[in-house]
Image (cartoon, rainbow, N blue to C red):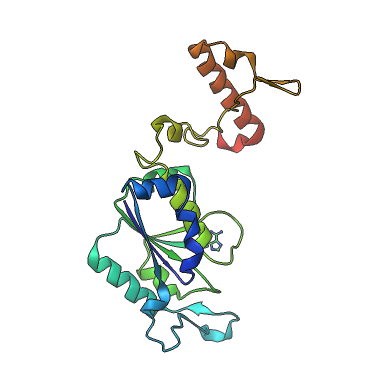
Length: 223
Ligand code: ADE
């Protein structure tokens, strides 16, 4: 998979992709991630990518020209499965969307900023708008990082134990069961007996029951 990200804050996106599973996936050639500075596509001598909104509304708005130039340039090189705009009023990101996006060849993510973006971008250049939750971030960069992380870990080969991505919380609309490691007893707190029993079938059944119980208790809306 190839992921291109258009942003006015490219430095903000250096660290999230250089650790852990995403870094390993890059090193293995499973994913290529390119972060582009939107200002490189500005024809303004001060490299500005925003302007005042029409109609006397407060705040600044991202201009269509640099965005159109950047997207047109990238689209001339390859076909994108989705051109995603990160915005608090987009479709709420979830595991199902992550699963679908993980099957893509090429993704382009445009990070929103300032007060908003010239609406013509949303009408004509974007194929999907995604929000990571009902709160407003300063910009779309952290939302892009969240999406990339959730998507890349699902690409086969990213995680050494393939089953582990499939047993994540939400993969079957259930929260994950609790996990424990050594020591079996710590300050009087014991690991559930069943996990030490060696009966794999019983353990699986217990884990499933626990997943259902946790979901009922914490996220009944998932049923
Ligand atoms: N940009 C600002 N807030 C956001 C959010 N909640 N999700 C995606 N992009 C955003």
